Every structure is written in structure tokens, then in C-alpha cells.
Image (cartoon, rainbow, N blue to C red; front, side, top):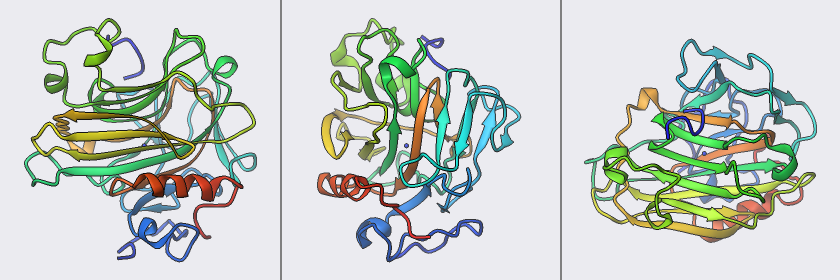
Length: 297
């Protein structure tokens, strides 16, 4: 299965290169205080707000050997206009490289054994595409967060390869030895064994922006009480719950991949250090509905 795809109080500090602010902006104060990373792509590729490294990286593959700053190779460009509220990323089928931001600080990580509350957060972003005509015939991951592989301590969303219409999924796959100790084939595994939310009927369409939000809570508690939720346009799509979500990362190796195998537009990636409530996710989608920016500049 490894060949399935190419292996989401006020802020104390902002990166020196990040001029945007969340405080006193469009977001409610409680959400702005929890924001740890945001990139609008309006002025460039690097994050507007970051608690860690704001730099956008590119490498030849998901192994991340010899990464370079910025875009390298065909299949990806930053649009100055045409985004949700300004700029955006446009991926094309020629995209075969791995593009990413580094996790430390940007997606605050709590390792196993750190306490009863565990690790939690939210990843939010926007897509614009027609999955049936825009996507190439391969698995396409708008977001994949891991330190190793898609099936080992990873959080991802993807469009399936073979389904028509294309199915959208959220995967929250803990350490491989925890969630799949027998290393069963993922595609033939019974659906009940997969830590995945499946959305058969999606709102994705060309010419409109769809909001995607992933919340996760009580990961790395050591208990079978981890929970992850997927929202589209502010509406809940499903939950993965009742699992021991153990994520044993080397934080220095963990990254947020963008657009692995994907073709279409992407905009406004944001990370929060807690699970937003259903009402907060709906609020975020509503703020963005009319094309308003999510950060003051």
C-alpha cells in the first residue's frame, strides 16, 4: 500500500516576516487567540502569521530530501488574483513535487505521555475545483500532515482515485503499529476498521470556494477517546471516535504537505491550537462566504 500516494490571551509572538495580525480582525477574539499559523497567499508563499518557521518549501518528493525555499518545478503557481480574497495557489496535473510548511510551533504538538488532556487542534483551508474534471487519475491529498508516511501517524484529506464521482475523505491514522498492527492492506480493509470519514456527495465545484475544517481532540492521551471531525462549508460530515490516537512524531521531521497529487485551487490555510467548536467552524465558514479576508493587513 506504500505506493498508493506520494508518501491542515493574544498571540505572544509573530514571526518577524509575518506582518498580518489576527487580533482585532475579522475572527472572533477567542479564535484569534488560538491561531498559530495562517497563510493567505495574497502577498507571497510564506505564512502571514506563524509561531514557527513561516517558510514555504518544495522538494522533489515526499521524502523531503534537499528542500528549497519557494516553488521549484512545474505544476504549481501562486496567483496574485483569483483567490478567495486575493491570491491563491493553483496546482495542475503536472505537479509531482512535495510542497510543505514545517510543523514545529505552527501546529503545536503534545507527545504521548504528556498529560491527560493530550493533543488537539484545528486545520482549516479552502478549495476550488471540479473533482471530476480537474483531478488527475491518482489519489490527491490537498493536506497531509505527518513526520513519516500517509499511513503512519498522519492526518490527511484526499480525493479517491477510482470512485466516480470522486469521494472526499478525512484520514486520522495513528502510529501504524497502533491502528494497523497486522499491516493489513488499506484498500481491502473493512470500512469499519479504517479511521476515516467518507463523504460521497460533496459541495466541491469549479468557480466556488469550499471550506474544509478538521478538528481533533484528545490525541496522545493513552486512552481510546480520541476524536476527529470533518466539516465542509461549516457543516459536519462525520467523526472518527473511540480510538487510541497515538501520534509519536519526531517534531523536527513533521510537515504540513500541500497538494500531493492534487490539481485545483487552494487558499487560506489556518491552524488553531485547539479544536474549534461546531459553532466556531460555522462562524469561520460564514465570515469567508462573501470573500472577506480572514486576517487584517
